[in-house]
Image (cartoon, rainbow, N blue to C red; front, top):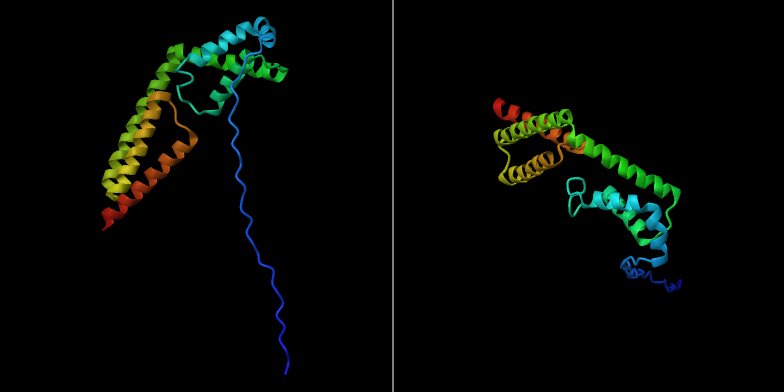
Length: 188
């Protein structure tokens, strides 16, 4: 008779993840010496960035856009007395140039007319999509969710006067899907 020998097996134990401390951002303290160094050299840029930040048509309140955050960070760097590198200086100059272009476009009657035409056409197409959605006879929950999406896009068009590439693609897919469903319903 053979004897069976059992060998102890090492237990596999899952290692618990360690909690990571979240470090709160420290408030920016203006160093008096550094403030004095940045103030005379970048006084004009500080005023310009302060004006850009306060313009709600360019940077809406509560915006989480990374470009808007970057503008705010550059302003804090100037005011906070951080050392301004040549790269930061050129970025600040580009911010001011882009804002000047924005103001020029806002005042240009041809640009405003083209923008109003785009808004009117887009809103008409969004209304057409809503009609197609109703004709397609989807479930109530799907219709409500889609209407909420269409309303948010129409608000975006009214406020911004443009559509992103992703929004356009989504609307085109919806249009195809609704037309396909309507054709299917009319065949039956």
